[in-house]
Image 1 (tube, rainbow, N blue to C red):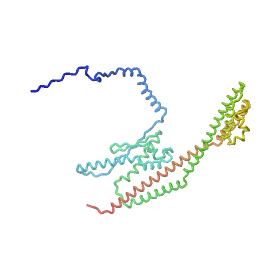
Image 2 (image 1 turned 30 degrees about the horizontal axis):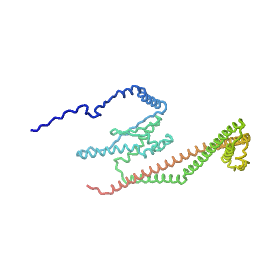
Image 3 (image 1 turned 30 degrees about the vertical axis):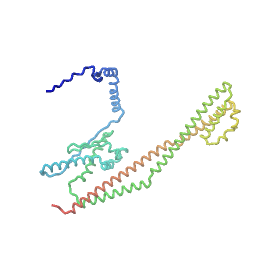
Image 4 (image 1 turned 60 degrees about the horizontal axis):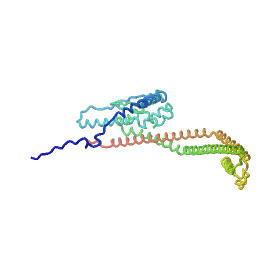
Length: 382
C-alpha cells in the first residue's frame, strides 16, 4: 500500500502580493460626500432646463388620431392545422402591408392635393408631411397618428389622411373580382395622368430658371463680398495712417527729425491707399524723388500734412463706398433672389414627385390589368 503525504498549507508570508490587496470604498464615499452638490445639482439643473424649454420655449405638440378598421369578407371553412397556420401568416403579412402603406408617399401626395392651401407651405412637401405621421396596429384596428403645433390642423390632417388611405388601399386589397374591361379605363386614365405630369416637368426643365437664378445669386454674392473686402481694406489703411500720425507727432514734440523709415512707411501707405481706392498709379499722385528717401527725407511737419490729406481722402472714399453699398440695396436683392431660387427648387421637386407618383400608379394598374387578363384567358384547372 502506497501512502500519499498531504501537502502542508502555505504560510501567509509566502502568499502572492495581490492576496494582501484590500478594497477600501471609504475614499469613494468621501468624494461623493464632498461633491454631493455637484452630484445632485447637475441632474436637477438638467431637469429644470428641460422643463423650462418644454413649457416656455418650445411650441407645444398636439396629437390627433383617426382609426381605420381592417375588414375582410371570408367564408367559414374548417381547414387542416397546417393550412390554418399558413392562413394566419397570410393575414399577418396582409396587416403589416396595410400598416406600411399608411406612410406611403402616394397617400401623402393625395392628402396634399386634397387639403391644398389649408396646409402651410412647408408641409406641402411629401417628405416634410410624412415626418408628422405615424401608425399603430392593434388587432384589426389601425390607428393613424398626426402631430402638429396646431390642434385643429392636426385633427383635420388625421381625418383627411384616414379617408385618403381607405380610398387608396381598398381597390388594391379588395376581394371584388375585377375584369380587364373594368381595369382598362383606369389604366388609360393613369397613363394620361402620367404623360401630363411628365410633360409639365419637361416644360419646367426646358425653361429652367434655377440655373439662371443661381448664377445671379453667385454674381451678386461676389459683388457684395468685394464691397465688404474693400471697406475692410480702407479701415485697415485708416488705422495705419492714424498710427503713423501718432508716431510722427511724438517726433515733432521732441524736435526729432523724421526717419527714413517713417518716410517710406508714408509712401507705401499712400501707394496702398490709391491702389485700393482708385487704382491710380503712384507716380501720378506723389511728386517725390525716390533717390532722396535715404538721404534727405522731408521733416515731420511736412509728412504730417501729407498724412492728414491722405486720411481725409481715405475717409471720404470709405463714406462713398459705404453709401454706394447701401443705395445699391444688394442685401435685399440677394434675399429676394435666394427666396425665388428656393421656390423654384421646391416647384421642381413637386413636379418630380407628381411625375413619380403618376408613374407608380400607372405601373401598378398596368401590372394588375395584365394579371387579370392572363387569369381570365387561362383555362380553369381542376
